[in-house]
Length: 110
Image 1 (cartoon, rainbow, N blue to C red):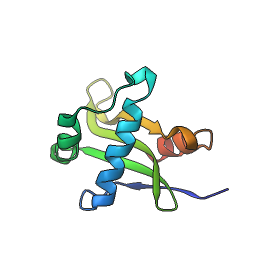
Image 2: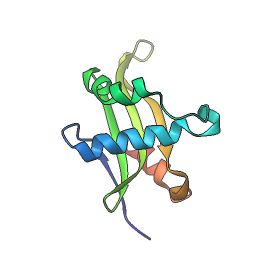
Image 3: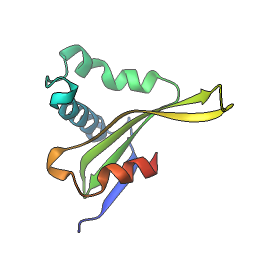
């Protein structure tokens, strides 16, 4: 089996920024998410928007040099538990890479 590795997206890397857009666009195309590609506005502003949000981070699941899964997360704080928390906003794996434990690995990394 090919090794899967999880790493945080590097906003200084054009390849990582492109991978984030590709993966979120693929997620948007899923029927449960509306089955439509990302609007142009979203494509043009998503990376800068994520960079500007304090506590936002994106994990990429990679096989060799290809990003095949994504977890978009936001650090927050629970008032009921009085401790930090992580809001997992998006979790997606490209269809052709599903059923390999990639989603589980992303959850473990979060």
